[in-house]
Figure 1 (cartoon, rainbow, N blue to C red):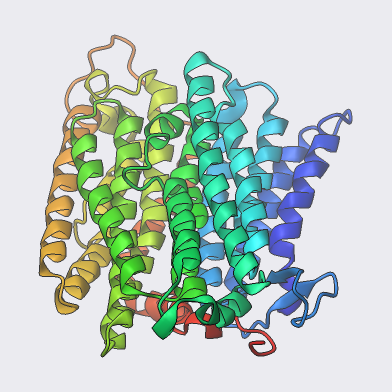
Figure 2 (tube, rainbow, N blue to C red):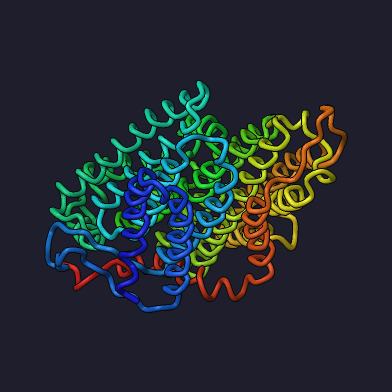
Length: 512
């Protein structure tokens, strides 16, 4: 199993360059699309096969655990959860794109960039050292900048430029944080940095000014990548402007892998969970939940509404992770409460990947067939586009937290965990945001799926392969709620344990 781990990065990265060659060879251009689907499907199969397996860390290129520099791949429980999530969404998105992207030119370029972004996200979640984490973050970001502006219209190019500028600012802060940690410890391996960092702190084991500077730079840069309020300005433009499959990838997995996952990994496995860091995450998560949902309620552009809900729903995950860090850092840490918070947060991360990707694919199908993104210009889609309407309704019920769909269970677990961990006001806030989310999607039901269409040209159902992609994610939204217990034991509990074990999850060959 250990030999399969590098393939999660090598296959899509290599495939992205092979597609560039195939596209310019007569008679082989059509094979590029099939190759893209095959690579993503193979990655998903590898990710599923690795779950439950005991996979030792891998040092690429012969670098050993005693070296300062080197590429380390760590496939622990948290990485396995992220790999399965990334490639599950990528498979649905690329299937959807096989029909949706026909109206664009140079589809082969889209497929190449898609594989580069997917491989880079796999690299982010498998990286065991800080520098290569940064490298893969940048590779995923560069591919996503190009994909946001893929249509080359004015709106798309403007959104891509704003995304690029703010993304670069976030990257500079992350690189600053990595540089400071390297200067303090002389190491880049996460486990070794975590082991040496207390010696570089102030008296009494408290973090010194340099450590706090590194923490502030990393948390700020990663919060921008995760589009947490007040660092969210790029997302409401970037997600609606991108082609629907890329919107699904950006919201479904990119802000998780490049932002939320990295935040959790840095706080728990590098800096160490402290009340200060946890409090920062709590504030970011609570503000994103509340401001994001109120901004979403006022939107009539379907894709912008979904974009603001990405901010709000990721607030749940960051809030739960921050609360877990605070609980663990207490004088008498309650590891059971922390484990429940992490379980709820990671479960909601997985669920959000499924239902938000589904909703963005549904919005793309509606926009392509109905010719509009405005809710008031839709109407009657449940009669004209039954498959798209059904899948969109499943996604809406899931994100709104209606039982028995998956979003209900993850939100309920987070609310219960917050209350039991001594955060009753945050639990109430999470319940209020869930109610406001339901209100905003009642609008989608009323104006888009039901009602009467004003245009004399009624839409028709999207191509079958697009319906298959949406149906796959709709099935996940239904089954993830009903199969909560097996999913917890198989995928989510090991992911939470990887964070609760702190540096032990990444330690290779012992700390120096």
